[in-house]
Length: 151
Image (cartoon, rainbow, N blue to C red; front, top):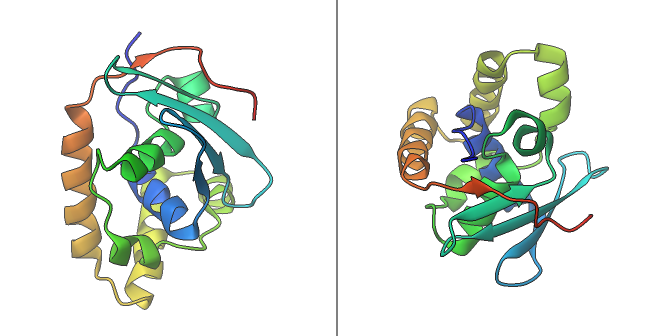
C-alpha cells in the first residue's frame, strides 16, 4: 500500500521539527524523531531506492499518510527542500496542544502562520514554501512497510 499525501500542515510541522533539532539520523535509512512536547519518540525508516517508508507516528501508522516524521527525514536527506528561515519561524511550537485544542488543521495553520508572522515571516512566504514542498512530495511514491524499530 502506498502512503497517501498528508494534510499540508504536516510540512510546516516537519520544518519546525528540523529547526528544533528533534530529528536524529541513526543510519542511512533510520531516524528518530522526538515529538514537540518531548514525550514521544517516533522511529522512521525511509529507503528512497526501494520506495519504502514507515514511521511510528499516528498519521503514518493509523491513517496511512506520509507523517511529519517522514517529511522531516526527507528534509534531512535533502530529498525535499528545507528552508531554515521558515523552519526557525516554526520552531518551539507545541503542535500537539494546538491540534488538540483547535481540532482543525486549517485553524492550526492559521495560528502557526500568526506565530511565524510575529517572528518576521509573512504568511505568503509560508504558503509558497508549503505548496512547493507539497508538490515535490506528491512526486515521491512510498510504499508503507513494517521496518521501523521500536523507539
